[in-house]
Structures are given as structure tokens and as C-alpha cells.
Length: 224
Length: 243
Ligand SMILES: Nc1ncnc2c1ncn2[C@@H]1O[C@H](COP(=O)(O)OP(=O)(O)OP(=O)(O)O)[C@@H](O)[C@H]1O
Ligand SMILES: [Mg+2]
Picture 1 (cartoon, rainbow over the protein chains, first blue to last red):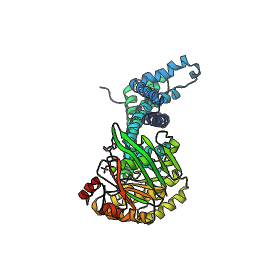
Picture 2 (tube, chains in turn orange, green):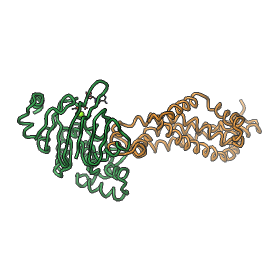
Picture 3 (cartoon, each protein chain N blue to C red):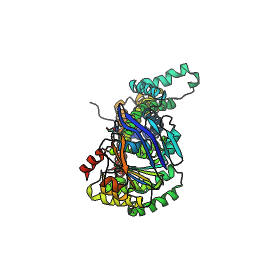
């Protein structure tokens, strides 16, 4: 066993930390887009909108049924060969697109379950007051579904953060890509990768703390 | 003015409403009594299309709807002529007591928030819950929740208030406060159609009592006569059991 090169690791910390903002930005954009898309798909499925419901089911089935890495390669390397207007797409955009669609498929199912988990009496009360379906969804059902789905959705955000590391396979120098480059130069693979692992770990743990506070606050308003 | 003709509702081959005809004058307070499972709730729920009737026409105020040719716009228009008080209160769980009352004024009647809040606070004072304006339903007793439910229905100022067994989900200790509030709503001559198992209450507030059995209105009349001298043997058998 060789000793760890701690000096090298310490020196690497600021180098790698510079890439944390990009990782968080990619994850946040993907999360917001995935949430929007997933909510739309969940509503389409709950309302059984003709045609769209079927398409949504196929979409969800495909993006849950195939590996994210395959989807990313398909978007970045594959699609531009078929649709030439996509050749200008860069790695960051392709990664965000792929991660968005992949996680939207998962999140749609949790949001759908959460919507169906809102008590029937809430739907009837909203209808009895004279609300349109859109008003009922926006004012009564979705806010309550959001509380039911919140813990699961935060878990998906954690997954999304970790999944952005796959962007390095599309040539993006993000956190993982930077660690890979550093390691290739120094040959100190263990030091570089254990450090990048610790950075992801700290980010995710920090998020878990936020999640707990969020749940405590939301819990107060819905406690029965 | 409410006018119902030939209202029919089936669940599969179970005919739950069997051609109901019913007229209610403005300001009239009508109580429905009858055994369990005879379609009392279904009648109320069909009047505002929480349940889709199969046949019949419903006129409430200026809106007339034919169940067989129903459009979404008509359904909404009809609901805006009615308000509903649920057995299990069904308050919006994500909203405070005040917002439960103000919500319909804002989203359905298009009031601005300040005006709706002011009106909701007036109503809260009327129902004796001014100090609970910011409480969520989960923090209210059953009786308080049902009073907010009634407040929400009052805010709608609908042509008719439909009320389904407002006290049967309540612990006995809360029944009185809810009945007293409903009595005040009735005294204000709000047109109402109320399903109740509280016979004394029906006798007190109703101008007319309907006895339903097997999806039909078997007998109806002023409460004095209905309770003291019912004509139909089914009414007599029912009243013998509950009185
Ligand atoms: N959604 C439904 N699907 C199938 N059958 C139903 C449904 N709702 C009601 N029914 C049936 O319709 C009949 C009338 O029910 P309803 O709830 O109107 O009776 P009710 O007179 O209000 O009884 P209760 O006094 O117990 O409240 C019952 O036989 C019931 O089983
Ligand atoms: Mg009933």
C-alpha cells in the first residue's frame, strides 16, 4: 500500500470546487424543466387526455426502460446525424436535455401518484364551489400533491446531481470531467476520485438537511 | 326557483334515482328524510352534477340543463347557482379558514383578494370563528370545520344551498353549534335542500319535508302533518323507527 498524497489532494480541492457551480447549475436547470414536464405529463395521465395519455405512457415507458447513459449518447452522438439542425447542440445542453427527459419520466409517475393521493373530497369540494378543472388543479389539487410528492422529488434531485457526472462522457468538463483530467495528468487516480466522491457526498448531505427543514415546515400545514 | 323533472340516475343496473320531480320556491327550506341507501345524497349530488344524472332536466335560477345534452359550460353555470355543505366538511386542506371562504369569491366570482378577504372575515364573525381566520382545517374541531364549511357555502350566495347530513360525522358535543348555525341560515330565508337524520331539526326549520324511498319521493308535506299524520305506510314505518 502506498501512502495518500495529501498535499496533492489539498491542492486539488480549489481546482475541483471551481466546477461545483456548473454541476449545480446543470442539475438545477434539469430539475426545474423535469418538474414542469413531469407535472404536465402527470395531469395528462390523471385526466386521461385522449391521445396525449397514450403518447405520455410510451414516453414514460421508454425513458424509464432504457439506461440514462444510452439516452445521453443517443441525444449527443446519434440524433445530430439524423436531424442536422441538432449538430450545433453542445455537450452541456445535450446532458441537460437527456437528464431532464429521463427524470421527468420518473417524476411524472410520482406526481401522478401524489395527485391521486389527494383525498376525493378535495376534488368534490373544488367542483362544488364552481371551479374549472384548471382552477381546481392549480389552487387545490397540485399544492396538496406537491406536499405529498416533495420528499420523493428531493430524492430525484439528489439523483439528478449525481447523474450530471455522466456529462463528462459527452466531453463536458464538469466536476467529474475535471477530476478525470487531473488524474490523467498526475496518475493519482485514487486521490482525484475519492476527492470528487467526497465533494458529491457533501453536496448531497447539505441538501438532505434542507430537505428535513422543508418537510418540517410543510408538515405543519398539512398535519391532520 | 328550482325545478327538477324526471331526474334519473343509475349505477350499473341499480336505479338510484327513479324519475324525480321536484319544485322548490325561492326562500323555501326543504328537508329530505328516508332510510339509508335510498338516493338522498345522490339526489343532492346530481343537482350540482357532482354525480352525472342519466336523464332529466334541472332548472336552478336562470340556468336550465338537460342531463342528456350536457356541456361543460352548463355544468359550471349550474354549480355557480348552488352551494354544497358536505357531511365530512371537505374543507380545502391547504388553506386557512379564511381562505376556504374567500377562495370561491376569488377564483369563481372574480373578486379581488382584498374584497374577498374582507367578506370572508365578515362571514367568520357571523359564524363565531373570527379568531380562527388563520387556522388550517387540521387545527379545527369537527364542529368548527363544519361551520367553516357552511361559511364557505354562505359566501357563494347561491340560489340554493344543498346540505348533506351536516352533523352525522360530528362528535355529539359539536352537533348543537352546527344546527344552531344552520337554523340562522334558514331563518335568513336561504333556499335550502337538506338531508338530515335530525328529525327535530327538520321539524323546526323546514317548510316542507320529503320522504324518499327506493329512489322516489314517496310522500311530502308540511312537517307538522308529515311527522304527526303520515299517509304512506313506508313513511309511517320509517318514522316509527326513528322517532
Ligand atoms: N359512486 C357509486 N357507485 C355505485 N353505487 C353507488 C355510488 N354512490 C351511491 N351508490 C348507491 O346508490 C344508492 C343510493 O346511495 P345514496 O348515497 O344516495 O343513499 P342515501 O340515501 O344518501 O343513504 P345514506 O342515508 O346512507 O346516506 C346506494 O345503493 C349506493 O350503494
Ligand atoms: Mg347519504
